[in-house]
Image 1 (cartoon, rainbow, N blue to C red):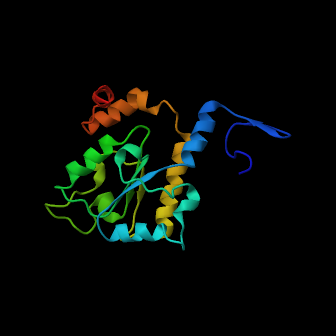
Image 2 (image 1 turned 120 degrees about the vertical axis):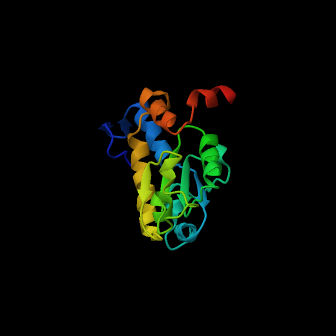
Length: 185
């Protein structure tokens, strides 16, 4: 695997030193378990990223998790109707911390071409989004770039993000009470 890059380290002959936070962040970034929430044509493009031509598993993501309790990354790809919104929010709430969200496609990002009463005009109205991948539908290369942006975010994020007042305030704006979920588990 080589030496850790882009981190504050002390390199020597046969050894390398860094902080525990940075080592944990590197391990997390290279072992993200995604939960695909694919509903339409963007979901098909996401499936192509798992194929041999694009091979998303080279980024440590070969294990798709179809249960929110074992996932780190929620990949929302496709049109989300307002009826499906509460289901998506519940899936997000069931994910353990730390968790990240990747919004794939114009419909998940902004409602896309469906400016109607029944389509949610962006998933960021119900859950916080970390990275947006625009396109209708986005190409597999764009989805991989979004995943790589998530990896960079994970590497640079503090292990204590979930306990910060800023994070609690962010979740409060989405009517998600982090203290209530911690007590119920």
